[in-house]
Image (cartoon, rainbow, N blue to C red; front, side, top):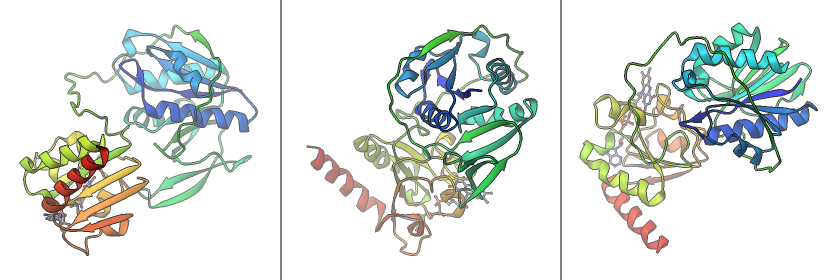
Length: 317
Ligand SMILES: Cc1cc2nc3c(=O)[nH]c(=O)nc-3n(C[C@H](O)[C@H](O)[C@H](O)COP(=O)(O)OP(=O)(O)OC[C@H]3O[C@@H](n4cnc5c(N)ncnc54)[C@H](O)[C@@H]3O)c2cc1C
């Protein structure tokens, strides 16, 4: 009764979130006194996962899984879970995982917990802590069915290096046809993937015009950070929707989040409040963002940001 961990990859490369999923699954397997098995799909180098403690890897290579389709992945995971005789599936919350986990749970007759932030506090009954109410609260939930699907919140558990030697088993899967196919795919051209970024520089309507993002991009560059924005900024087309963070946008948890000219509305904070450190720059000392921030600078972004860039460059030199 192993623990099966789905380690997602993009264009053959693992995402940082996959290493976190493996770290969680390996620790859970040890707690449950069983083996951790990772499942990878079209990965260039499956053995990379042995750096995170997993000793068995099932590798599926199949062209029809290159383009993501919820129903095909739900079916694949169910079949491999049944083949392995596992009752516990672990994966990290990504947009793909979030789209197939509910269908998988129904097809596999499993209890599903999303937004999981810690190892189970008890195994019998199986109890895990998860985020609720747009990350504003935590709840202990009991998964009563024998089959369980755990979707771990990004950056909640961490990546733990633990080098072992893993066996890789090639598995030739029969794949059900995708019931949704993409007509056109637009890939974000940002240098650093927002979902994986450790540092994020984000700006809002306080920036006043799209051309003022030059300084935001420069700050992001000196910090080696990704860029993000509030919803109205992407709605009016100043920035791409790929950068929109918040309740209706991306949910991120970097180590450092800069909120510049962002008021800190509840819907914005819902997507960033798992960040380790939040720094806010705002002219209004009563802006709600200061309640969420660890550090606040009351000041004009057009004055503060260039000074910040100059200081960081000076420190780097
Ligand atoms: C159902 C729903 C879902 C939503 N989902 C999201 C979401 O996912 N993400 C999201 O971001 N929003 C979301 N919103 C919108 C949200 O409620 C806010 O309207 C939005 O976050 C405000 O964006 P903002 O902070 O950029 O702009 P504003 O509210 O206009 O704030 C601009 C801020 O910039 C400051 N400022 C002005 N000039 C300067 C300057 N020179 N230097 C420094 N600071 C300056 C101002 O003091 C102000 O605090 C949602 C709303 C609804 C109803």
